[in-house]
Image 1 (tube, rainbow, N blue to C red):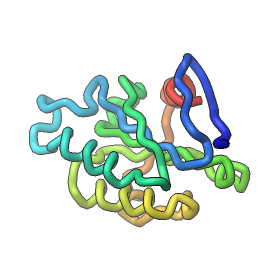
Image 2 (image 1 turned 180 degrees about the horizontal axis):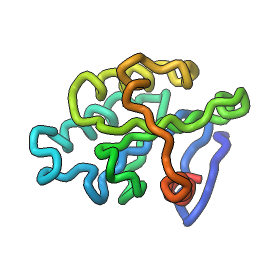
Image 3 (image 1 turned 90 degrees about the vertical axis):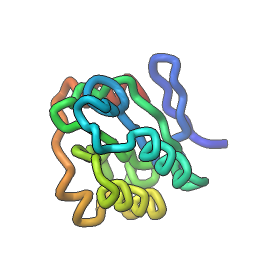
Length: 137
């Protein structure tokens, strides 16, 4: 049986990488990012999840200045080995999305992420980290 983390009633498996896709505030906004197909992006991430990862959508991670935001949360084994969540901002084009999908294919390689993903990573505020903790735990 999978190990699970639980907070605020949301339970996610912790035996796989969790991919948190923010779709609140400015993330997912057609007004702020009219050239991004947000629905297609989310569909690609969900389709890529397979057995390697689980995808959850957040109402807001309070990092709107970096929209669109996707957070790659390591599985328990990677976390025990020292991996921490990777916050990726400005995920508004196919190249960044494709590299995130590549990370999802090889979740054990976190934190060794492709260069494009690394260029888009940012350190979230304490408030943003609390929002993530509230979402998945």
